[in-house]
Image (cartoon, rainbow, N blue to C red; front, side, top):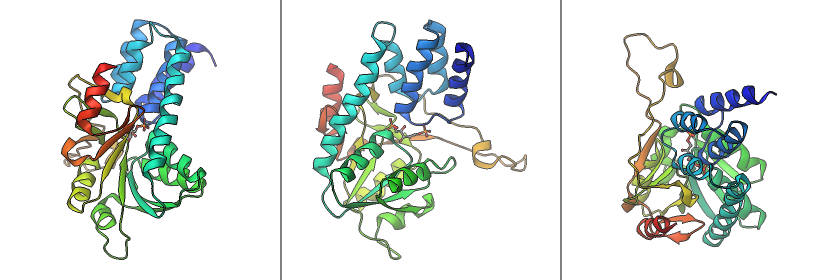
Length: 271
Ligand code: RUB
């Protein structure tokens, strides 16, 4: 494929969420920049996904940093995250997760490969069903998964109608803000609230490069994702992300360690 065509394909796939999740978007952006190392490429890439500080941070570094160094950061960070998550998972844990997060899925597969015994509850994550991607990947790796519709969050977390007691919630992150709040897929705030009420600890599993001290725009996506042939007079809202207040978060697990949101922000700021 010609460089120009590949670049256009990456732009398109980031825009229409074919390339999905903070880490995958940032890796694709590294490839895009290597195809066209220009300021205009950086500007275009950032405009495609405004709620992604990992993308912004990588593109800030890229003109002055070796591409390989950036790629190896992702691998090293994931290895340390895997190690930290492995220590946290207890045999017989029932872990609840939402959407699809590379950082979460990889750390769970690593724990399974290291013989930890646990199972997963996960939510389908409408409108784009990234939860099914999570369920498929985990189940392919022989992890037991039970998938719920998003509207069953409360039942899944409150041991009702035949569900079992969830012991931990693992969520990914798109952004970690300077006040310690975390931005993740819509539904995450509600999950954290219900978990807190039921004394289930909520852990955010994320590469520390997702930290930002800028004000972040939370993406509103197109109505077609929700209901493409809706009658004209029905207004449709499609907020893609929401904040998880830091008081609902037990710890942020990153390559910087297992830290409270406040400690995380202090360390991430120094980077
Ligand atoms: C994905 C989403 C994920 C984070 C995880 O949203 O909210 O939880 O991006 O990041 P979308 P990572 O599907 O709209 O991109 O994959 O780096 O762990």
